[in-house]
Image 1: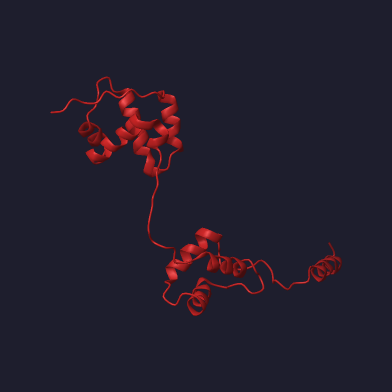
Image 2: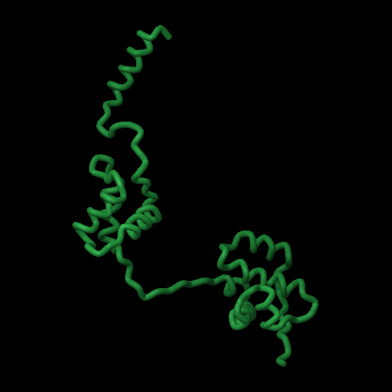
Length: 170
């Protein structure tokens, strides 16, 4: 059996624990690995680390190597790459932004938005794609009713409130 690597963790435990709280879920086990190595009195092998963390031994080895090479910054570096071209391009995104931010010509439902995209731009796009994209990128909430009519005259509304309070005896 191969000898376990003796890795010296430069960061102290309170820093690692605070760093653990700040990390997203997919990076927490990397910090947990550093905490285990820091607390351990004997060097841990990649198999022991993998068993305690619940990951593959090759993953534990890769994490250890990235920490040894360039420290905690390299360990927490996470790049997800893809060769897939986005379905909704910048031109369509800008048109969507204009339509969603225009209260007079906006959409009343996600179905209406989906139909518009299907008819004018992407005939094969799925409803779920449009729904998730509009919520994620634009924060759209199309099913919530508006508080008042978009063509409402504010001056007339104030006048009505004045006259109604005068006649109600308040």
